[in-house]
Image 1 (spheres, rainbow, N blue to C red):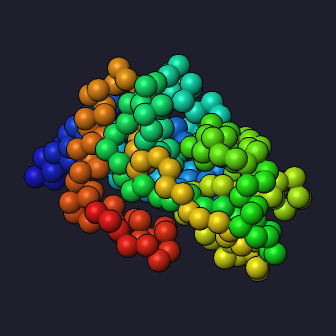
Image 2 (cartoon, rainbow, N blue to C red):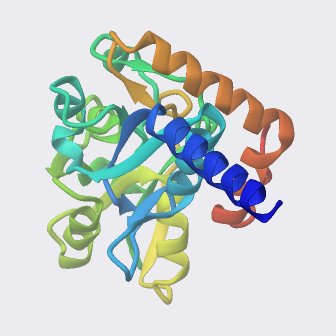
Image 3 (tube, rainbow, N blue to C red):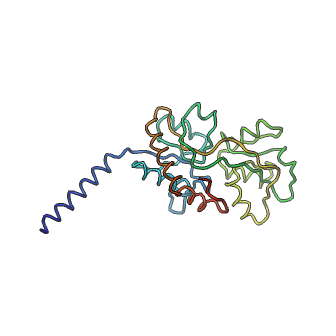
Length: 244
């Protein structure tokens, strides 16, 4: 009897291993520099809201996923060239991007952008020199306004430009800026309005990967239905109710 039990257990382990080996391998590309959406933690690992969303999506879709860090300014070209298979990096769905890649259904709703300046600045700061991360919807928005846009490779550099006086204000996602302003001891303040730019946030895939997109959409739909996605939004974005 003992031998039979051991043999059964061994077969189960082998079968599970074979099933795992047959799972589709998917490399999840992210920036790792835009908390709370994504960042690199003290252990050098990708962390944040999108890490948890991505891991749950992969589990539901039965995908064998790994994480790849890539700079923002080349994140779409490197998806298209095959360096990874998805982009999950706080990327808003826009018509311009949709001409190059496809998107899953949104996993985060449209979020307003916000201007931040040094303490003492007035609303006129938004019409001066405004810093924005390169290749973002905010950079395009500033470029089409009366302000002068100065683009930087990383979000940290946009804030450094404001602190140094190189820029009068920075424009970025409100969800990114809110904790930074709260932790600045009053040195940084919100100015001007909060423009609505772009659509919700989705997972980017190559236009040829329709089957993968369908699997991601099914997993996201399940997370919306079972409350998992709302719970993660409420966990990572303080004071926000899950909209799904």
